[in-house]
Length: 88
Image 1 (cartoon, rainbow, N blue to C red):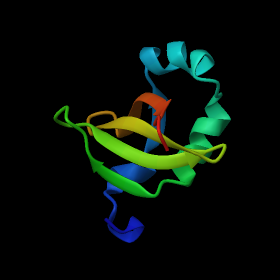
Image 2 (image 1 turned 180 degrees about the vertical axis):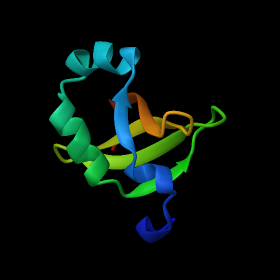
Image 3 (image 1 turned 120 degrees about the vertical axis):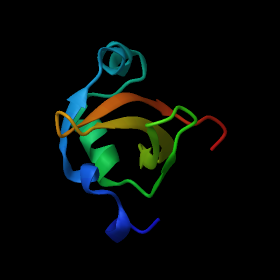
Image 4 (image 1 turned 90 degrees about the vertical axis):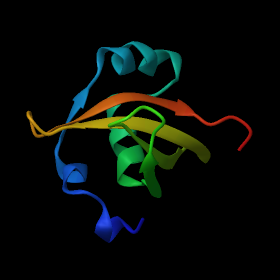
């Protein structure tokens, strides 16, 4: 999927889930790094959970995945979690 053809919700305001906020310290990143990861997004694909999307990106020269869920009622993009992809 080309960045030009990404869904309109890609540019919505972010909302960080409680799960993400809990895991950020464990996984060694802060909110600004998360925003940089999203700005560097390389690929967007459907997640295994219906309504969620997997964003493939990088941070600190490592591949990362960020799981997001658009919330049309609130016009926000909920960031569910973010984590390093091992073995890359």
